[in-house]
Structure formats: structure tokens, C-alpha cells
Figure 1 (cartoon, one colour):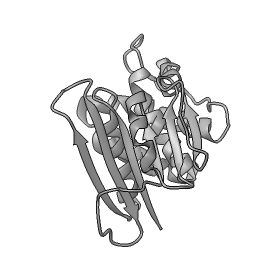
Figure 2 (tube, rainbow, N blue to C red):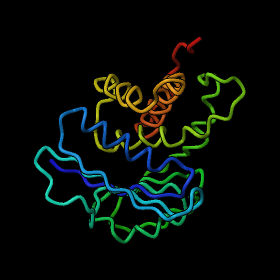
Figure 3 (cartoon, rainbow, N blue to C red):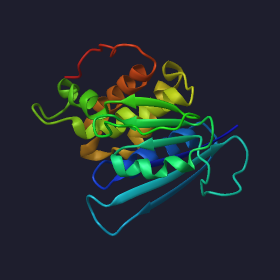
Amino acid sequence: MKTEVILAGHGGQGVLELANWLAYFHLARGRHVAYTPSYGPETRGGKVKCYVVASDEPIDSPIVEEPDLLVAMNIPSMDYLPLLKRGGRLLVNSSLVKDARSRADVTVTEVPAAGIAAALGPYSPQKGRDTSIAANSVMLGAVLAIEGEELERQRATVEEVFRHFLTERKAAYIPLNVQAVEDGYRHVRGAPPLLRAIPV
């Protein structure tokens, strides 16, 4: 089975991180993975697009021309909607994309990623800090839900992803990001956020 995804947004939204996390998640499960970022010279605010291809078989091309899933983190990302294959899924960050112009032949899933992330303040290692920056982790959970992953079975893999990327001082943010994934996943599955013990 092969899944092709385009993830798009603007610099500063953590799109590159999101794509990296998704790629590593599949890599950790023993799948073949191709990750290709594309972005402008701007540090923040520029257009960012990433391809992630995950397959049980060797991958012949890292470029995605007809994605199964488009993750649109902002309004300009909707420019890639024509590329989405018929029967594909459009996942939009409804915190920024208020009008998900859609096609009749695709399924739209809206996730208020920034709003969900902002509610995770108690999980932040720095009390009072805005946690809406974890919106990309919320969207990772949403992507895993759309891809049909069973999060309870793959929770250790999600934790492995963040342990790999969030090292040294950043490791304190692992519980926050894992919870963000959980809440994004549950939002897509139509379940309320799962209350867990808040780390001390």
C-alpha cells in the first residue's frame, strides 16, 4: 500500500516539521519513505510545500503529482487542491482556512488546529506560554486518523518520533506534542479530547 501526501502552509507554521514527523513515523514502522521539502528563501511567511510518500514497496519517485491527501495549513495552500486525486482527502486547518473551497469528488475534514493546540496550556513546560504553536502536532494526529492508523497501538511510535526530534532542552515539550497528536486524532474520529494526568 502506498500513500502520497502534500502538506502546505507558510513559513513559521511548522509544516517542514510536520512532514518530517509524518515521514519518520512511517519510517519507524519499517515502511519505505520519501520526504521532499520545497520552500522559498523567506524564513517566515513564505510558501512551504512538502511531499511525503510512504509505501510497503520501494518508491519509484519522491514527487507527488496526484496526492491521496492534501494538508492545507493556510488559504494559499488551497492552490494545490486541483492536484488532489479523485476520491482523495482534503485536510484543512480551519483556524485559518474558513472557506474550504472544495470539489465534489473529494472528502473535506476541518480541524481547528490552533484552537485545539491553544487548549493544551496545562501541558506546556512553561506555564502561561501560548501553545498554539503545537498546531502542527494536532494536524499530525489528524493525518494519522485519516490514514486509518490505530493511535492506541501506535502511541509508542508517536512518542519515538518526538524523542527523535525533540532532544535536550526541547525534550520537555514531548508530552505537549504527544497530547496534541492525541487531540487532533480524536477530533477527526469525532471523540472529545482525552483527559490525561498533566505532567508535573
